[in-house]
Image 1 (tube, rainbow, N blue to C red):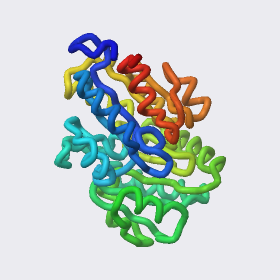
Image 2 (tube, rainbow, N blue to C red; image 1 turned 180 degrees about the vertical axis):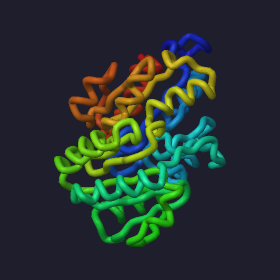
Image 3 (cartoon, rainbow, N blue to C red; image 1 turned 45 degrees about the vertical axis):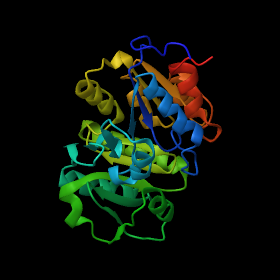
Image 4 (tube, helix red, strand yellow; image 1 turned 135 degrees about the vertical axis):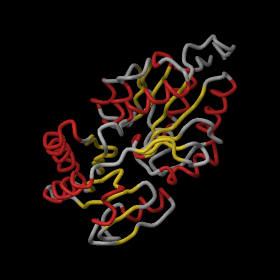
Length: 275
């Protein structure tokens, strides 16, 4: 392994998206991915994750990887320590959250609402609810009235299996919300609406400040349009092979698909410079 001596590798921190990047489409953390994180640590390169999931939804990864860096849930909406104590949280204003829900429903998408601790849905049998529950490892609260949760709304999600419809809804929400919100697709079927500071670009700058690492020495890796925001803030960016052409064009490098150990390949080839 080249550049493994302390200070020899210009990258001091790798920040990884989770779904479609660190884990496979079946949400599996492969042995090779786990080994790649261990190799980063052996090379004295720190490793952090950021995800649209709630912080408690990445517990299985935290348990497997023994993270030592802050965890950015909700695309930066809630930042927690590895013990899940809250470092920072960005809530949507209640009236803005209510209006965003109405806008998403007007685009014929299902709506979910996340607070810093809970997940609310109107229909437990709607598309992706069961899979999301399996992914985050806790069930939603089922209710037709989200009003009681609006004061602590961290993320609102528009959900639909018509990917073109989700993409159009993204543009509608971006135009309507302006700089009052962040509206980005975290998956082809998920449109995430969060506080304007709750972006993966914000996560890069926050970790740079907290860990005293220049952004030029941070590498980011992801697969979705919302990952471009962190690509733009980091010194090196890597797109997954399963990413769209738009995301790949925004990155410094492109690796294999998440189902072909693209994360591990990227760490070995671009960060650790393995022979």
